[in-house]
Length: 148
View 1 (cartoon, rainbow, N blue to C red):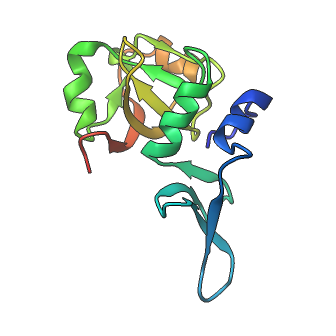
View 2 (cartoon, rainbow, N blue to C red; view 1 turned 45 degrees about the vertical axis):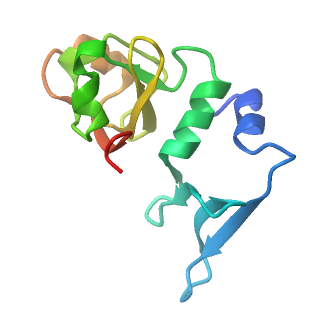
């Protein structure tokens, strides 16, 4: 999840009361490592180095559906969509809109102009910097929707 505060509605949508989740722990330390859906699908990954959650495509799609455009999103042109879907990184010159609250290091969802989920990744720049800069990487893509 992104490090900035989710609004109450998104938090409730991410963990609905009528849905059960499984907690996967480390065998050695017993610390939480993953959150799985009741069907065993990977939902969130707890990063040991900073104790924050990383998104998966499943949790990214839930956040996209529960939030207003352009919250938590980096928007790219439809013409670059195929590259990003295959796991290529997003560069600043290709960002056409972004949530200004995004900070460098936040997990983000990458969408096209039609607000369709393309990928999830880690922001290398803040939202404002993504719009200002014309060079350099904006999002290191961890997984594209065709990358599976």
